[in-house]
Image (tube, rainbow, N blue to C red; front, side):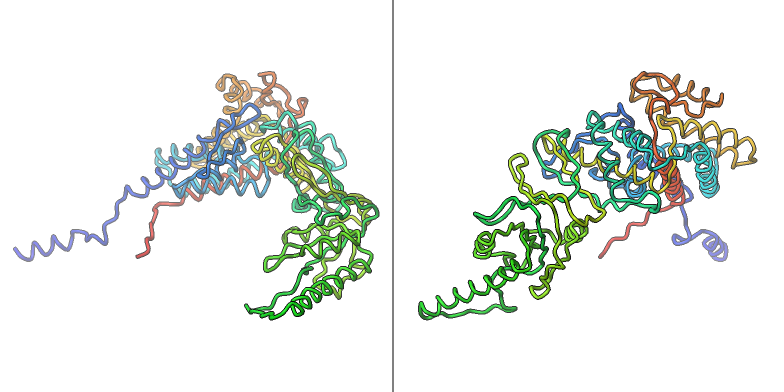
Length: 535
């Protein structure tokens, strides 16, 4: 009897050996539902007729936008799988700058398709491998329908910048912002040689007041600080500009100390020495021929004292102080003046030259503008205006997206039609390609090809059209060989989208498909969530 009980106990699995076979499927289902919820939250923002979101943070600050990356960044997402979609939109923003809403919607549609395939008994590894193959084939199809573009062709660049701006809150100002973005990028790159654009060389200064229409592209530099020193000049022609990183104020010791002054004569001597010390510095600056002085912000002590400002004003030197440390590189790149760390190195060779440096009024505050730089670097400044903070912030985000679109064209010089045309073409071509495959791969390919039609469907829905009839007609047109047929949101019909000047860079679409597929594959491979708590 005892032997029978012992044998049964040996057969029964212990708790450590027990594994819930349902758990991986439940975890996967939970991850897919959470990620799809994020995609569903922003799908109404897609396209030119997409809705805007008003986001209020914990401090009460309000943001109005329809930019996918901005909305997701502001949302407090707790689920780890949902956070992956937030990171996906940020990756798309870094890579292409545009298509941040599309990439999340595509990932949501692919996850929904994966969920259906999992329900039918497909293994996650097989679905993942098919999705990798699908993404590489989709990039091939997109490249085959791309139109080559020359960077000297301003019209094509303007069309793609306008397409990017058409879905933004400030779309009515696209006629002014698009040429500004194109001119800014072309000023800092040599189209014949360069294959990338460093957007840090384009400085956007936001200033409240007036309207977006009053924004301007400045071939020079703008400082948000006003000139310092009473009685000093606020306009200087034939400017000789010095950029200093040392302080024009009484020196301090490295450690705390106390100086005890017992009589007035000693106090007078201290003040006299201080005046003489500062006067020597200002005389050296004047002797070098400098008449515009830019002073870096100091943390430990005042960068420039009131006495120094008074002496500099008497010597007719225009002073701009509190230049941020991170702006120093941009300033010397633009003006061609070397940052000077000590007075001994303050020589005429270290100065930059410009035609004009002047203080100008901008709303309720003042700016300093320097133009006509003699040896200009490859940089440009944009002064952005707006009637309120929300409009100004959204104009900044929209202009950044337009600049990123032009950067995409410098990286990969191809355009493709917009308006849901590439997704419909991919759907038709890849469904056809699926017939040449066998087994599970063919089934997965066909399912993922159908999932791409989510983009034209949502575009039509947001534009107030019937999504089913619109997508059906669009599919039919592409099946007949009309590669450039897309949804014309303005007319509410299907038309040749290239004739409507709706174009976008190839890199935006290829990046969206590749990144969305990678994200979905990562989510499919997860079969457990382990919470590590610290004791």
